[in-house]
Structures are given as structure tokens and as C-alpha cells.
Length: 91
Image (cartoon, helix red, strand yellow):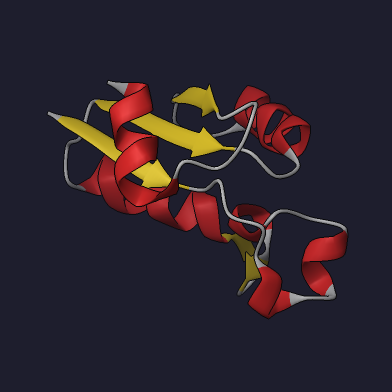
């Protein structure tokens, strides 16, 4: 089964934290939000995971290299496509 995590946003409601870290990597309880989502998908036996990104994409790429679960990163280079656009782009 496939899973997809939307992580391309700017995290404007979390400013000023997201001036330095993308929303998906903001730590909650000592663990990045993205890792928490990956753990949930892993516990649900989701074997193929995609994550879209835009803002601070290099930070997410660095995280991916050391993540506990493997996932494919879909970079929205030009502009954020929104929820439906992110999924459409990754298909």
C-alpha cells in the first residue's frame, strides 16, 4: 500500500520557528513532525511512502538521508501546487 505526506507548506502559523526549519521538521516531544507521520505509516504497514516538499527542501533532503523509514521526496520546484496539485504531481 502507498502513503503520501503533504509537507510543502511554508508553516506561516509557526513563525518564527519556521524561519529556520520547515514545518515538517519542527520537533514535537523531541521528534520531528515528519518522523511522527512516517512512524504512523510504518506501523500501518504502508510500504511505499512519498513526501512532497517545497520550502526548505534541502533540509528535508538531509533528513531523508538519515530517516528510520525510506521515502521518496517530490520537490515542487516552481511553486506550491496545493493539496490536490501535490498529489497529482507525485503520481
